[in-house]
Image (cartoon, rainbow, N blue to C red; front, side, top):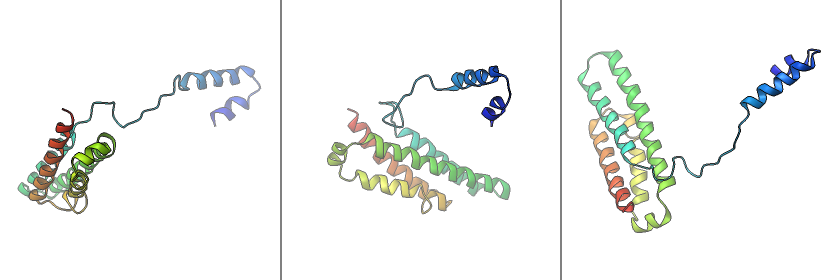
Length: 151
């Protein structure tokens, strides 16, 4: 639409102005990344922090009698649960390599169980703090393996 506006006029300077604007906003350099995070920045603590937020939201939900507050607690819990899954997926798919899965044959199962615990059949689908505790325990198991691979 901007092009048509500039190009429809009779003045040639409008076309030049459009090219100058396009040039200004055009990328100066194209970069490609091979992972979601810069190398060496992976850390399961991100998933743990979000899982602790999930647990806190569940506890606050249980302690409140205010329906509006309870609704907000559930909304926060669901967003944080999804963030747990995303942090775990990045570790699972980008950090851990075939040699890690060979050395720790239960690693795929741990990730599968942890992401399910953060999903609809887990913390997204309940306000049971025990489920959040199970999620935190799985993240701790993954964390132990992660730090062992960093040595």
